[in-house]
Length: 249
Image (tube, rainbow, N blue to C red):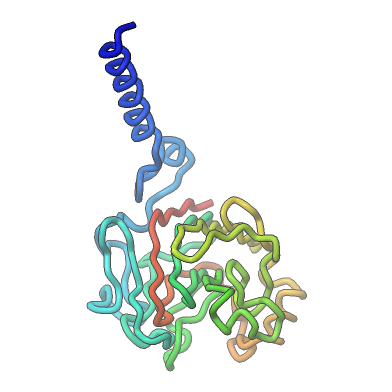
């Protein structure tokens, strides 16, 4: 084969590989055909505040959050809890569900994904009340070493109640991770990057014991709502989210 023909062939092959890679790459903030068949829905459309509002507002916060290039980001504001834009919640409530969220933290960041949230609880300072899938930089945030239950404030833990498996697969700061929560008939599981890291039964004797030993003891029947909103937390640190999807069971 002549040199010119060989180069042309290589170019065509490489171009084909690029096209194939693009076709097979994950589409951001969109459902795959199999997800549509399984009943998944986008919880965030990738560009607007549709379906979301401030936890203590009628509308979406005017500051503290940004939507850019298909990424939803809570902005840094000094690390205070719900003191800038504030938490955001879904307009709808959910009972039995599967939830997927891609998240990316910055160094020392703290945030969370809460579920079974009732925004009428806790009208005082701080975040709205609900069960929390913790988002944290375990290496650089002091919360990783705090709490009444050792390790229960580390990433993917049930915040202040149950510690995530120490062998959890976490990607470094600045890279995307995937949180997955499934809750059905009071059985709840937390997953991180495809690995189950904890499970528990809402309302069980053991669950109530853990609550009684935690910061949530002052809230009657904490974590036992039949249904509630999904919440993304403003804890004053820059944390990004995308590909937020839910399937009702």
